[in-house]
Amino acid sequence: MGENSDRTLLQRVDRFLDYTFFAAMEVNVLVIPVLWLLLVAANPAEVSLSAMTTLAVASLAVGTLRGRYVDVGWWPKPGHLATLPVRAAYYGVVVALATWIGVQVQLFTGSPWPGIGVPAVISVAVLLPFPWLLVRFERLAKTDPAWV
Image 1 (cartoon, rainbow, N blue to C red):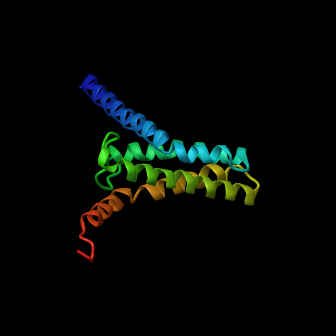
Image 2: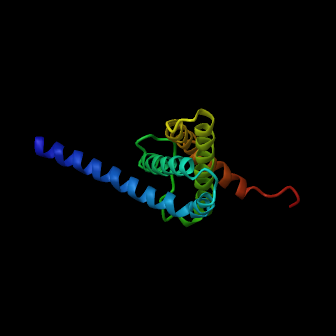
Image 3: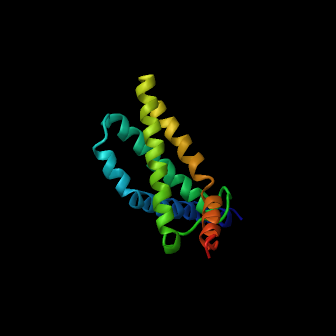
């Protein structure tokens, strides 16, 4: 009995790591344009702290949500080409917004700790409604324009 439950636990951990790895690869690749802009941003120490936090937390959040460990709806697989432009834009907004707010809070407080906590919370909060928004976007794309 113990060996079977260990194997099940190992399989569950392996599945979570799989989701997290592919989410990290996806998020980091799709936000390259935003990362290029962050290379020339003012306050590089604050930017790097908030951006690294955002990338790490967003990767964990996407892996968790895609694996339905927290079920917020259908999440597209990394290779789903139909949603690729939407995901690239959305993840870019997540990274840019969470990083910018994290930097602003660090500069305002003079402490690096908000540069970790604030982007982490914002990343998760902005990623949670993504499946809902994706369904609305798809519905909007299928709607006939008023002039037809």
